[in-house]
Picture (tube, rainbow, N blue to C red):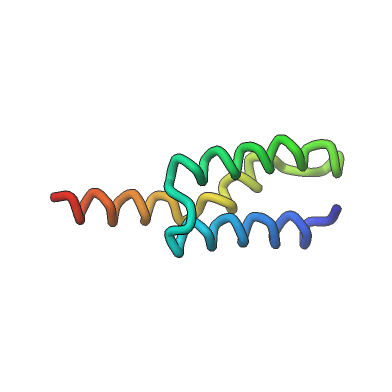
Length: 70
C-alpha cells in the first residue's frame, strides 16, 4: 500500500468521527486497529502519523461535547 492509500483510510476514519458516526471511544479503537493492521503492509508505514491523521477531529469533537454538557 502507498501513502495515498493510508491517507484515504485515515481521512475516512476522521470523517466518521466528524459526522458523529463514531464516538470518541469507538474512533480510538478503529484507528488503533487499522494502525496495527497496516503496519505490515509497508515497511515505511508511519503508525504515529497515521493515528494522528485518523483522529485529528477528536479534540474538536470532545471540546464540543464538553461545551454542550456545561
